[in-house]
Image (cartoon, rainbow, N blue to C red; front, side, top):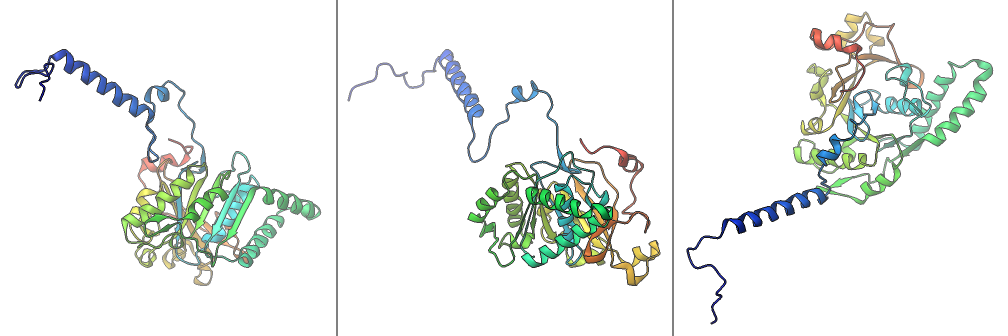
Length: 345
């Protein structure tokens, strides 16, 4: 066996210059790899490039919900979640402030989509007619027909509604993403805001499992990477209303991982008997009022709850003059003073 005369003798130390050169090469290689890495969806932010450019502006699709992020609307059954979403879809597509001022007027008409796992084409069509009729009631009679046609043409351009009742709408099956997720991504491409209802129809996992619920939110985040904000419709727990959680993010059903992972959450609850008594509303009228409150917003200051009232056909309208403003838990002076602030960081 031939000997390698160039190999260092046993116990001999490697020259420090060689060690330094080797370390430098490894460091350079690691830095180059970090700059180029884009594996498994991960991509390193170029710190120098980021900080040498102007600070980017944030677009709030809903107050506190930025473009490309995931939020949710939670409430018990029959609280009015689908009607609320349809009205937001309708108004945003026309460039109007939803429900007469629930949210600010959008900077431009939005492209909006609703994919409903609960509603049929018939029920969605009836609701759309009721919303349109409600809007036209506020238009001068001699202009209603022309306004109707203008609204219909604009809605046809800006709105995508898909009834998915009876359709296998599962996005996560046994922990893995399904083909439906890729299909949905193609459908919503180019939209500004997308509503998906309901969370229970989007997966076959356990709502009490942090892993399963985080997977649902992660799938929605993947959809949001194409640009729209995604709002998931979720149910609240049976205990939420009786336990006084209607003003809490903890009202959402299942694992807290769902609320922890989304960036925005609004609760929708029918007026309680105690609230009706405080507002001087009779029990026969109580259920026509619903309380809307943003209970989590990572990118906005706290905002007060608002009362909505159901009208003909279940159409919701702000009710500022009918009842006292909904009061949540006592806010600090700092929180109260922030109510007049513009949404932002």
